[in-house]
Image (cartoon, rainbow, N blue to C red; front, side, top):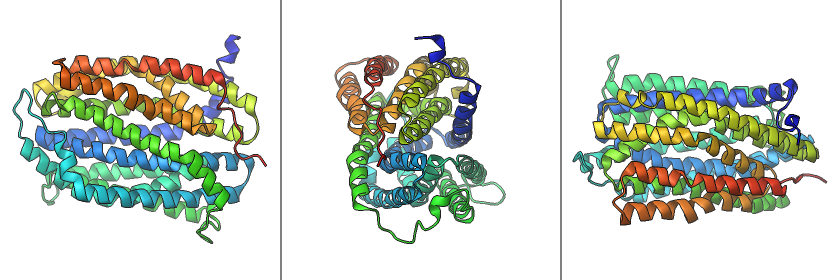
Length: 461
């Protein structure tokens, strides 16, 4: 192959930045504010920060359930839009609404009935003798308010995802920026009791998040319904609540593996963190710091994953199969090279950021080491992320299920479980062992991409 097979022309990169840019900006701002958010909660103390971190791990499973549940109809939204079939987009949109509301009901019932038991799974004594009971109470208070933000979050994802899949990426970005600004301001006021407000601590952080979710949801809904020329799928979207049975069957057949995959993958990540927590509550604090900082840098390859899904999905839907293969290869090369640079920046900042937190020296030291490991692995993680979205864009959802959550539960979780329960391996060494499994996943992803089994037009007549 020639060098030009791996790099696009100016028009190609302009199109990539047009899609990825707004998604990246929104994600960076959201995660930067989450970092500030996290630092503010961290100023209250290690136990409050750990309680919030544990609940956010549980909510992470819900968030990924929403993303996974909407991914199935999202495949069809992108391909129907590429085909020019707006009625198909509307039907996919309705299917998303049903899935989102259903997920909220299931997880709300789970957290109301078993929230305390789930939080308790992460509470273990460590070197610093932190207060486990206080951490449990902080977590329960935080979860009680955070349950209320689940519905506006789900509805926002339904609208924003459909807007992106139909080419409107700026509005979700603007709504996200507005929401995080609201969240940041109310966090400052409600956590610390500024401007005459009561100092509510972790409850204040939860209320701020709830307000921000409602603001974001309102912006997205109002804009979509008042800008019908730029979001034509919404015209007649509620004229009926019916989703054609053949499409629903296709969504169920292709989307169910994605839904199960996202839930199992998120549950797998949460289980990994639970394994790490066996080394003590200070590890929960360290993992929270490391993951919050890492997520800010992970925005780059996550935005590129969404870009792969949109660009490749539209090309496949339009029947341009060879062009889809060519542009997918160029997108992956660009992503990996970009994340070598991003990883280097993250490594340079790793010793600095954890020192901002009001937590123990042990937690800070562990967090720094975890950040170094994550920075080194970033190019490899970016490759597997793009491989996942490539396979998904072509409807190979069973393969993506095995590649993603299958790998997590069959390889990563058993490794962490054995190391945490049956060895005295220090937490940093354990974290390195689990992260290094990504090399195996890279090799599998390369073979799956080369097979070209993902090159499918799902919406042809």
